[in-house]
Image (tube, rainbow, N blue to C red; front, side, top):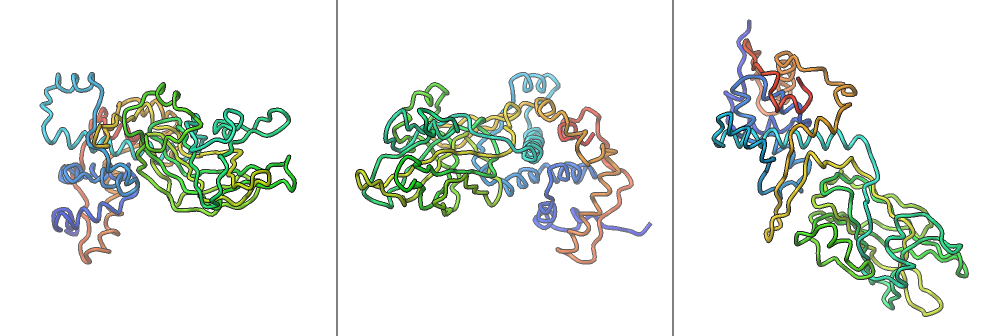
Length: 378
């Protein structure tokens, strides 16, 4: 057999990391780690799955630590674990690979993500024109359900609406806003904003459900939140339709709160000569919630957070993945060697003349290995 070289051995660590960073799917990272014990150690030690997560979802850079349920720690300690650096690195590798796998899979099934309305920066007539009305299309008193701001003499005055999403961790891909058409006024004016911007984030302090529900919906609550993502500014048309704003890339919302910032006003009301902004409906689409397999705890006062992971729950959340996936069951050694061929193409872009090794003794995996099992490759 022609002699071939293993680029992880031949190249420096930085170059090898750059090559492995070209992988796009979490299962490919896990399979790369199954090629040999050397690759297994290299992938875990250099946090390749974490790097892939951060590349796809920069919001995860706020993770300060990873925690697991007490019974898992107790079980591990009972098996002789001493929480060594290697144990922690391997745990983190498993968690990040499983997290990205869950995000990728759940994002293929788009669903409505808003749980309830929290507050508006102002409300003209509360509760008849409350922000809660934007989540329903029902009619009342012969008219439509909508939210209206207070009037303002400045046409550039902004307004904000805040909503709680269905989970503290979810991926948002599209937000839709429908301006309100005042069909009962002469000329049926449409009270749209000039443009719109979106923010995603979490409370500054630990708020339980009751704290949020007790916030006055007619008063601004923006100062109670930290926004970790801010979108570009999108123009809004003065049309009575659900206007869709697709984010350039799906965004992982950490904390479960959405702010819609309505920038400027285009419609003046004749009765008082003031400008108003009115919204009849808001809709948010994204991947399925990552809870209960993954959850977060905000760490005060740093604003960082602890990522909580419960192994085993992810498989329960994704029962049909193995059936619907195009990925064949492991035969770990066969899949791993095939993926080395992919590495070869990537390698050519970095360093000509070196081909990946064909392993005589591929990595052997225990059928109970959590890392491979959680990702559906066993």
